[in-house]
Length: 291
Image (tube, rainbow, N blue to C red; front, side):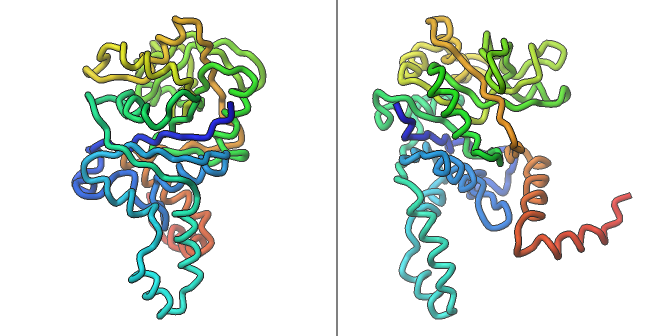
């Protein structure tokens, strides 16, 4: 079955960015002139996704406003300023996909927003992508994962290689090589100590899941931090015989905007690629005394 829907969890508090995120969702933090979550949605749409389900929570209304059509006052202001090209660019944001919003219910943890989306997803396979990180790749990350899913089925998780000192921040896979960039996952260890990690392949950021994940999530017990972890539900499916695959993303760069340092690196990297500012930014950076 063609993957038509993506669930984007966006209900977290963004505590690492307080006080900035007290009133502004972390998913709306700007990367030059676009919020983080727009990069995520654009990747999904470029991969063929039609329905974008965003799971929100308190203070997340600006996400809905961003993907809505521009209001009449803004359009009139742009027309008066002879900025019609900007009207077209912001209207394209609303026209990218069908946007569906649902409020998160249940205990804390990254499995909860996925289960919250069950009434919208129904009985079909779907994708999950976090709203505060993305990968720039050609072809898009999710498109690469869809190819693996079409060939092997089961569960497909995006994989990126992680440096040893960062392994404890991710779910790390114990893997067997299948072919090319495809690996079969024997188990996933959530946030292991560096010397206990089974590999350096982090499996996170994007998932293709069968509808049976909902039953697994309903049966999973709270895990590390007393949270409901998506990985624990995936491990239940594995124990039931569902094959779990990692698709190591090719020709891509991973951007984690979930912490301050990686967010700043992302802003600089993408600003240096932006045609409106890259030249002057390069000149400015050359003037800095970084010794």
